Image (cartoon, rainbow, N blue to C red; front, side):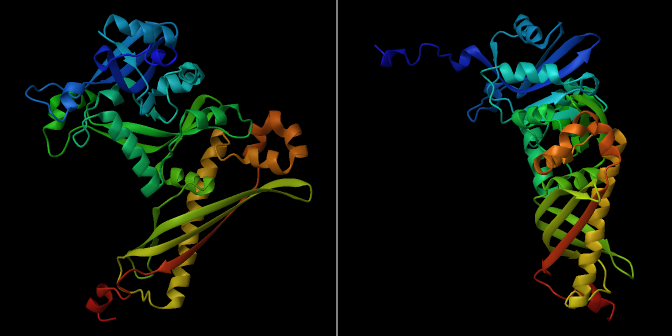
Length: 387
C-alpha cells in the first residue's frame, strides 16, 4: 500500500502552464504581476506548421497583495501557473524604489519554487516591458536574460548574478546592502513584443544589461554605471575574467585579459580609528597590442604595463566606492568584515553604520601580474613602423 501512493499528487504537462519568468511592478497602490509562459508546442523539436510565438505573457493588475495577484491570473489562463522552472525575476524600478521585501516574502514561501533563479532590476522601465521583448537568438526570452547575465559576469565583470538565498542574506545582514543587475531596453518596447523583432538581421529592440542597481535595505537608491560596476566586482572578488586597457606612451592601447582575481578585505584599527584595507590580486595575459612602439618582450615594459593596470583597477574600485558612499549603501559588506574581526567595535556602530560608512577610510591596493604575452611576442605593427 505504501509504494502505491507515490503519484497521488501528480499533474500532467497538459494541465499546467510552465512559467519561465516573473515580473513585478507597482501600479498606484496595487501590485502588477507579469508571467512569461512557455508555448510548448512552438519550441518542440517536432513542431509542424503555425506561426505562433514561443512564449506569451500574462499579466494582471488588481491584487492588493502579490499572492492575490498570482491567483487572479487564473481568470485569464486556462491552466494553473507552474513556477518550478523560473529562470529570472524582473522587478520594475518604481516597485524597487518602494521596497522589494513583499516580493521576496511570497517567493521564499512558495514550496514549488527552486532558488536558482536570478533577480534583475528594470532600469527606467517596467518589468512587463522587459519580459515582452522577443529575442532572435533564444526562443525563450527568459533563457536569453539568464544566459546573458552569466556571460556578462563571467567574461566582462560589469554585472552580478544573485539568487534568492543570497539576496535575503544581504537584506537581513546589518553590514551588507544588496546590489542587483540592472537591465534596460534599447528601442520601442511595442515593436519588441511583435514578430518584427525576429525578422530582422539587426533587431530594432534589444535588452541590455547596464551596470547595477544599488539598494539600501530593500529599497533602490541609485545605480552603478558599467565602469563602477566592474570596480564593485573587483572589491567583492567576483571577477572571473575581464579586460583591463592601458595606454601606450606614443598613443594607442594595450588590452590585458584577466584570467583570475582574488580580493582580501580586512578591517584594521590604527591609533584607535577603524579603516578598511582592500587588496586585489590578479593574473592576466596580454591580449591585444594596438600600438607599435611597445617592446613587450622587454621585462621593463611588462613592469610598466603592470603598474598602469594596477592604477586602472584601483581607479575602477575607487569610483565604485565613491558612488556607494554618496548613496550611503554598504554594498561591499565592510560592516560584515568589521563584525567578524572586531566584534567589540561593531555593536556600538551597528545602528549608525550607514553614516559611519560614508566617512570610513578605505585603502585600495591592486597587484596585477602579467604571465604571458600571447603567441606573438613582437607586434607586426612595430615592424611596419620600422621600430
